[in-house]
Image (cartoon, rainbow, N blue to C red; front, top):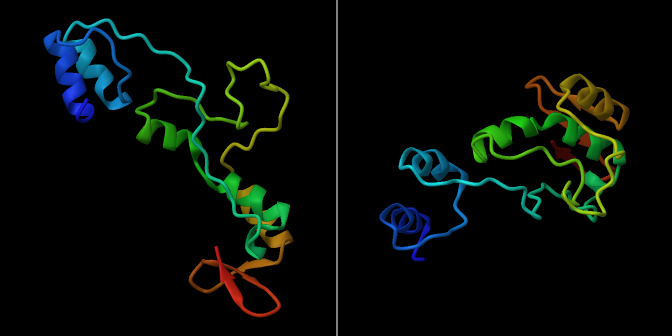
Length: 139
């Protein structure tokens, strides 16, 4: 297909019988009377921290940043509510998924506490700074 819009138009016109479509097209296809079947894909979208950078080497900073991200809101806005927050790079439908891994729901108080423990302090502008041996780094 040329693009996602063309794919949706071809589904609606009957030119194609099957397609994997983006979440923002689902309601339109259902209103058009098409049978829409949702499934959990073996794909995980994630934000990764570059652990070679001194800024991210402290595990408290990694956890603090994860606590600071409202991942439920990302699922709502980006996937139109058609997804789930991942707590592992392994999808929940995989045999290798471990349901006992810790979860990091958004919690700004925990985030701030962990950043403070790691030596980060908010400046007058409210932005947290971590002082390294050579320069300041921003969050």
